Figure 1 (cartoon, rainbow over the protein chains, first blue to last red):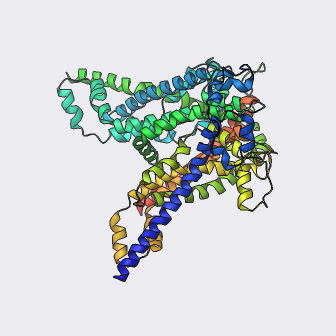
Figure 2 (spheres, rainbow over the protein chains, first blue to last red):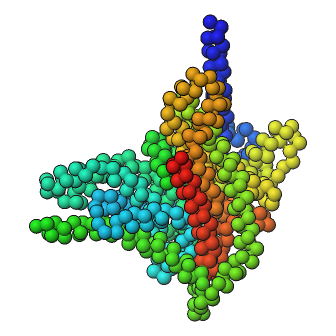
Figure 3 (cartoon, rainbow over the protein chains, first blue to last red):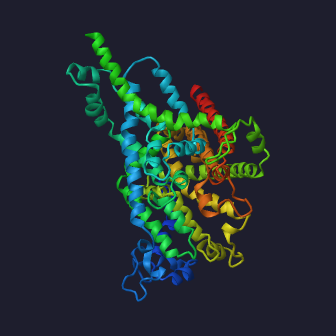
Length: 298
Length: 296
């Protein structure tokens, strides 16, 4: 009886310790993000600076979206501090650039990578095994190990300062091809034999049979590809000069480099760039978790 | 009939594999081999002088280039500190999250949020927190009862790099946690049940079941974090640009400065080759370790 009770007690202690640890970790991981949002909502820059070191920074006294969209009703609406992010720069343009570049890359990547993987997994032909090992070998090459010669190459193509220079080189990716390949190779042979007797073409088998069965791997690859491209910084920093084709990360860096720094505006920029992705992440959480797991089989 | 089918099949194969192969060929394989070729020349991006073959001169210069060597040393220090700390933290988090507690999924979501946040944004937010009047200085003052002296973290050559390390751990731990979590969930429950009957306590279970069963996962996490440490660039470029006094200078920042800013493509290509060889050695070690464990 007493043994049972002590077991129960130790379980309660175990649980309490567990929750305390979980909460401390959650504070550690969340507070910079919360800090970013609360600071962005504070319209008064001097108030931000005076409170930035204290816990009060998390409790906005005066909440407004002035840092985001400016305050057109202010007496001096033309002053930089009253313009907000969208008034100080062409934020919409950068947002469009990022969304456009990332969605083109991800959609084209899904098609090209899955097709190549399908070809390698479902056909037998000379040199197939060699191609598969080539793709596995290519997975080792990090982008930084080709960045400079690639820069030289696209300069010869006259591609600098464009959308396609940020899209085309990043469509085919050996790692995503490998993920698709591992998935397609598991399908039973009978699958396409049946389809061929029905008179379906290979492309139909790929489009109507293989892809619909591959939804989990499609979403994993799409998420991984999206995350890398959305935050991609080194390459656009080298290949975009003007504002026309500049994506969000480079725009953020340039905005951050302008003095005097207006922390409210900077945090508004950071929030606008982050919150949509975080919301997407919360909605698609299960798929996110799977995509990370699949990256672990490399 | 069969030959016609074969012809059709051959055409289908080409349609499926050609687009991907061409893109891989032009944008990965070609630049990869070009970096070897260019590394023996004095190629620049824009130059009126003709390109010349210079033999091993770029490599000779590289190993005498103080900034490259400082960068390499900094990358190694970064890996030596961040890899173990981040791995242990991620494993600890995975163990806590793996407990059968209510609402644990919400916590898992919270831990993963920094990973979803772009590094450029993370760098900007942490620059704000590292400010001399910022929250980190005040927090340190509070827990040391005012003995802490205010530091301008990112402008102090002994603090800037550790500050960037802490931030990088914060950003990366959630990702590794999920990898560990996947590994933990694959350990057969039977192993724990059997050892409980044998009277093993939790610590024994951790050291004799959990850790050995996680060997492959741990190898993967260690190696991939090491390679990420070598690729360090975004946060450095935003927060310190390599300063103060080169205390946060890294190989990739040097690659960027030589190849892009100074447009010395030949020299940067030599650096690219050396960088790749280092990554290759680490990857080969990983494959060997993993193979060994699979055979055992």
